[in-house]
Image (cartoon, rainbow, N blue to C red; front, side, top):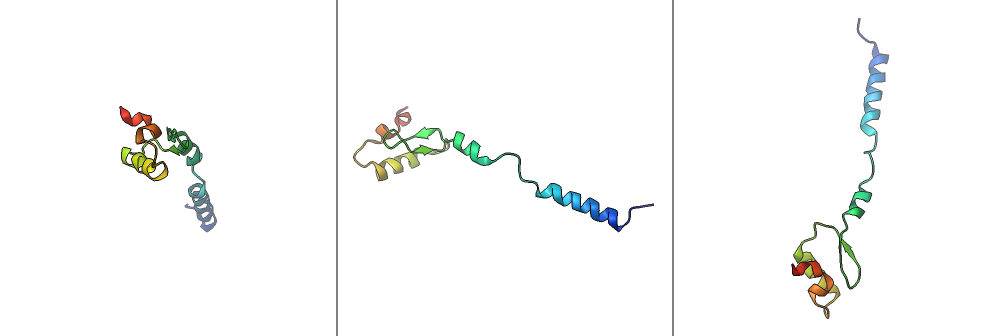
Length: 77
């Protein structure tokens, strides 16, 4: 016999509520955990995907008197 307009509105309302729910958990926590690279001079943290070039740029801009490897010893490998 099919549903009436009231039933259709109710199912549409429920469907829209499901779409509007926020994502489970926040990405902020995972971003904090990914900050694994740290400058040894100023202790600024960088995300784990930071490239060697970005580390070098930081060292040259923030610590011109220090060696790049003094800031980021992991680059010596």
